[in-house]
Image (tube, rainbow, N blue to C red; front, side, top):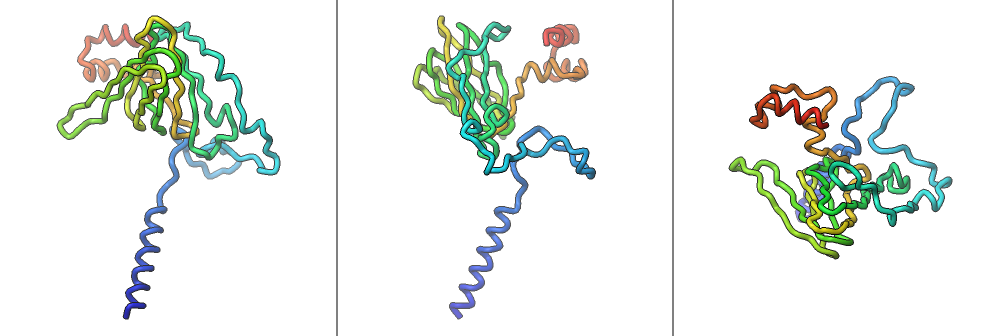
Length: 222
């Protein structure tokens, strides 16, 4: 009798394991449209793999993160990403890295990473950082903020809008670890007001409760 119950338990455990792993792999790009002609394929979910016998130490090495990015732009920040495109050995490992440079009062503007959570460490300077939750049950979006100094760490959950702002008089540096080899970035203002082709003015005017002329002015800046 006990043997029969034990067999039933093993069967249930096996079925549970199958169900737990019977899911699609995590996306590594925005989309991957299916094609029937193998000679017409352009992308895969990730990157093609080199024969392990042909791998070299250089495949797992990247220099240059000691050099600051160019912050001479309208937001006065620069992100230097190290993903599988820059460091081939990261392919399939599910991680990437970024150096972020901020001029005095420079901003890494509100953005999301659709495929990654982010852990940020301040190397130099003082940053005001934060993220906004997805829509809560009451319809609100809660803001979490913190002022970070050298050595402080902050986490931005996957897919949530977040930002960093240098509130100091001197340049700041941060290092970010991301939980995807291709985290993706959607900069909110650029995506909304700089889409190509542009989002219909009526849509943006109603969504942001703005006059059409203001919407057109914002679109012209992006």
